[in-house]
Length: 268
Image 1 (cartoon, rainbow, N blue to C red):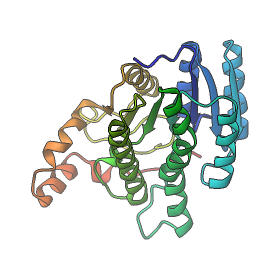
Image 2 (cartoon, rainbow, N blue to C red):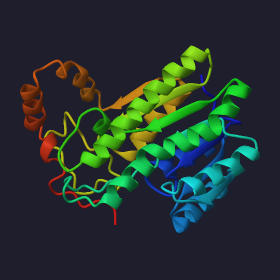
Image 3 (spheres, rainbow, N blue to C red):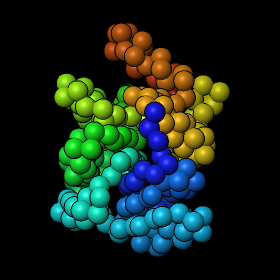
Image 4 (tube, rainbow, N blue to C red):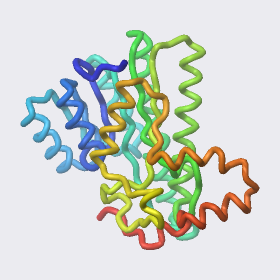
């Protein structure tokens, strides 16, 4: 079991959405919390919420796409005692086709959704290994398990995040380390990030509620689960992968997945 009580939890993308809710939940579980986000006003609001609960919280305004700035913040946090539970939650989405995305937007998607994971884990994993404990949580997406239209940059970044977690997990096992990892792959979540995205069959692929997702994530971390995929129907994806490509594509189309982003607006 991974204990939140008495642990130091660092959460990226903590100014809103899942990050905010996980921070609140961690404080209720008696954890010490560090928040990272580029949204200064949002961070201040969340930190005030945590302090109102009597929580021990600190925050750093940092753009995760800025490697040097992120590494400097991580070094400061590590110097203050390190991190026990690292939750790489920050993510961005453009919701555009490949040809509509600018070069800068594509690069930023990978900097935030993928490369930031490398910099935070490289900063805190040595301390976890030295202490003989730790947990690294990668919040990816179902988009990291199956590609769809209008999400080429996002899907590619999340596929990379899933691969990162898998490789890190087996590296830690080969080292005989007790440091654990958890990959989280949810479908669309009603946080505003995917505002306008639709689902054809909500009874199979519902738009998930943030409170539910956070509850499942925290439970998965506590129980040292290596993988959390939501909803359960998505667990059929590995089986569907054995189908011929044309049939696999037809199945996703029949489920409405390839048109799910047609009315995307996103968070403003």
